[in-house]
Image 1 (cartoon, rainbow, N blue to C red):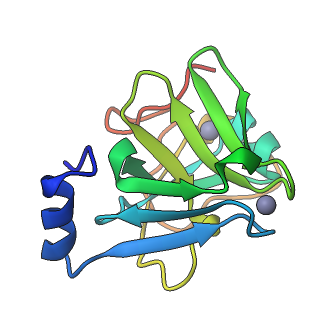
Image 2 (cartoon, rainbow, N blue to C red):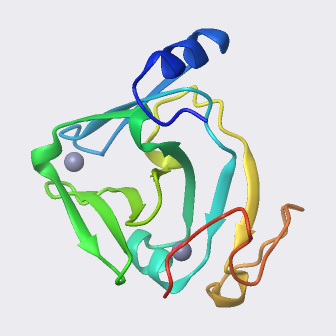
Length: 155
Ligand SMILES: [Zn+2]
Ligand SMILES: [Zn+2]
């Protein structure tokens, strides 16, 4: 895994044809660049994600050392639980990041990436808590809560 901006990170990037991705909030005050291949998109239907985004969460994640963020003074963090916080642009309100205090990666919202993203769908989590105004019928795996491989905040 790519954990730091280091030789490993550079080599990983080169091996994958210098795969980098960029993104921003709606107003452009906060921008970011990721290094290395991005995980498939996990859709989270928990009430926190629904209320923060207005629908449900769609996010990849990136090792802490493999993302550079600019405009950080506009980035605000809301502690939605004792262990995790949610980053958003304080100017335009775009939801951008989710960060657990004990994990060495940050979740990045799929919709913030500039195209082409190369992102692919993976699965749905917290479907037991999903909104009652839509169905999930895209054929992807569904989990009532989290999965062993997807760590999320304790609600
Ligand atoms: Zn903004
Ligand atoms: Zn969630």
